[in-house]
Length: 345
Image 1 (cartoon, rainbow, N blue to C red):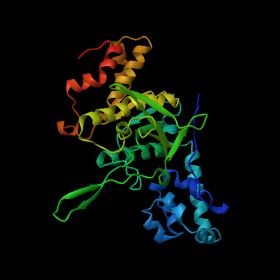
Image 2: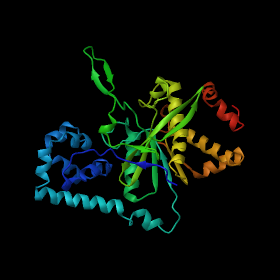
Image 3: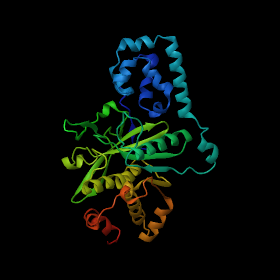
Image 4: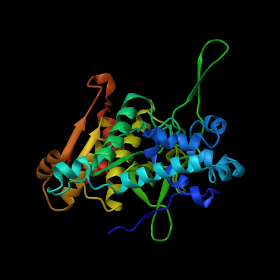
């Protein structure tokens, strides 16, 4: 049963005639539909460039007279109406590829885990090829109508801006993201508090709150450990991508893999296929094995069940492209977990 709700913070001062611009801004469908991008661009081309093609920042900063002008411009309104009609039809379309080819079979929800998603440059939660692959996967799932839900991180600092010092050295500058300028919405419980999940790290429990990004028809849920009650160090767990610190790296992967499974359960999802895009979410399989053992299966049977429902893809099948943790570090972070599963190193 669904016990949560999503409320995009759509606080824009828009004329009634074009009020659905706010709805478009909070659905990344616009990122692969140039006509929708032109809707914003035609209001104020200079501001569109200044805001780095970010429709949320744009709608917060655009002058009301310019909005009123297009709200009375018949040419613009015709363009707007066609875009809104296309968006509405897209979101309500039952004649998708998936429905046409698998409509008679029982839907099997796919859970897609990735440590980064490259959806648009205004959402810097990706580093490179893996992120672009994951972002395109989610967009294509929306277009095909796949029953897919995605899980990742909402990094508070994302990737850095590179500057070159006077003596020729690279300097990395991180800027804290302003979530109210991004197409992210908090996932709220019945008391309007943001939903959280917890994972155990050595000597403590760490919370992560849940955010949602709507990518066309596909929901993407992102975890963020910058939560009141966590230690200052734990609040930084999801600050940046790809730390070289092994303790931080394994902690991130525990939050993604184990916390991601728990987030989906808390949201009421019961996937039939679990897709790990690269190995950063590998601990997802361990958490699912724990669920099966808790339900009464032996660990050997749990392994079989997890294997049957798990998909793994990699685009870097070389040692340097995959994480490897020493046994002492695994023992440090998983001793209690292994005890629960009656396992040993």
